[in-house]
Image 1 (cartoon, rainbow, N blue to C red):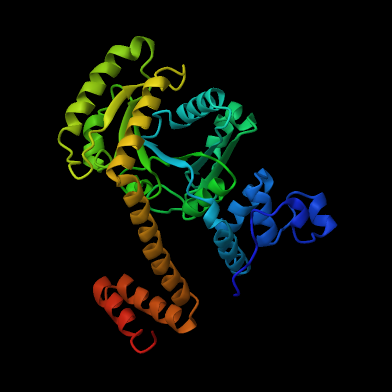
Image 2 (spheres, rainbow, N blue to C red):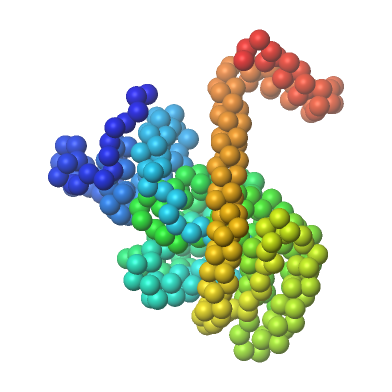
Length: 356
C-alpha cells in the first residue's frame, strides 16, 4: 500500500472532499484519512470509531487500521500513561472517576482518557461494560473519554488493541491516559508494557502487601496507594501502608534508583489526591532525569513490535488450510495420548521448514 501523504495539520477547509452523507452522520464509516483528520481535531465520535477499527479483526479493517495508526503516530506520545491495577473490589473504577474529575477541575487544559479493560463474558466474549456505567459523572465531562474494552481472554489483563487505542487517544489531544486493568493476578503485569507509571491500588485488611509480592505485581509497581483509607478504616490503612513499605524493601529497583512511595487515599471521598499527585510528579521527574522514562518507552515499543510479529505469523498460518488440517490432526493425537504435546508441536514446526 502506498504511504499516505495526508498532513494532519491541515485545516478543515483543506480536507479532502467528503460525501455529504458522511457529514450528516457522525458514525458513518469514514476513510482512514478522514478519521485521522477528525480525530486530530478532537472529534470524539471519530476517536470512538477509530478505536473500533483497530479492535476489529475483520480482514477489510486491518489495512485501514494500519493506515490510520501510521497517519497519527507523529501526533502521539505527548500524554502521561498510568496503569492502574489492584485486586477486584479494591475500588479502581471509583478511584479513577474521582481522580479524573479532580484533574479536570484543577487544570482547564487537562483531558482525561480511561481505557477500562472489562472482564469478558464467558458466553460471547464481549465486554460486560460495568466500568463505564460506574463512571457516570466523569463520562458527562466534555474533556473526558471512557472506553471499556473486552479483555477477550488476553493475557496481561489488557485487551489486544489497548496499545493502539492509547495512540489514538493521544492523537486526539488527551494528555492523561489511564489503563484500568481487569485485576486478574499474575498475568496482569502486562500493563507495565503500556504505562509510564504503574500504580498499584491496595486496601486495608486484605494482605495485599504479601499477595502483591507473590503475584509479582509489587516488583513492577512504581507507586502504591492504599485506597478506602477514610474514617474508621484509617488506622487499618496506616497499618497496611506500613506493611506494604516493609514488603517493598524486599523488592530491588536499584537500576532505576527508585523506591516506590505509599500514599493513603479514598476514591469515594476524594481524599489524599494532593499527596498522590505529588508522588506522581516526583516519580516522573525522577524518571526523566535518570533517562528511565525514554528508555521504558523504547523498550515498550520493542516489546509490541516483537509481539506483533508473533501474532502476525500465527495469523498467517491460521489462514493456511494445510496448516489447519495438520494442526487439527496432531491435536487429536495429543488428546488421545498417541503423542506428547511437545512432540506434536515439533512435528508441526518441522512442517514449516522450506515454507518460510
